[in-house]
Length: 127
Image (cartoon, rainbow, N blue to C red; front, side):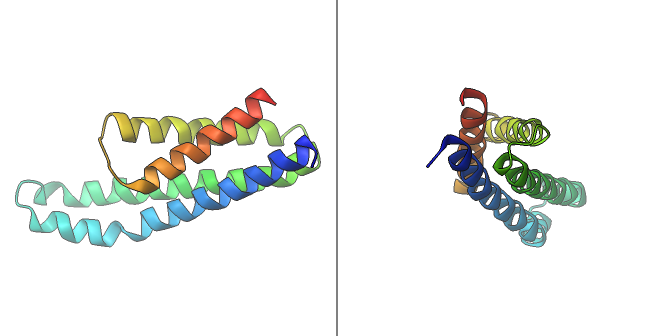
């Protein structure tokens, strides 16, 4: 298997994983909102947190769809595909690293998303 074919397929697989992560993140917004309404200390901030939670899920979904879209260009060695894939990977890697380091989230989906984004960046920048 040549390098271009391997990288484009890897980008497609990780893009699908990232997009599914974004869908799952957004779909858990109502459950997170209901849980926050039960806690008296953050009850007044629950709508804002729910909006932010849903927004983050849509952002991850959009970056995953951009990654999938770039697969088609990488497969044909088109110049526009690499900057799109790198920017989506950079956005996801920085978001995942900050969620792991600063927010101390223990959700395994964050680790999967972050590892997928870092592997994309590694393949795109090294090869």
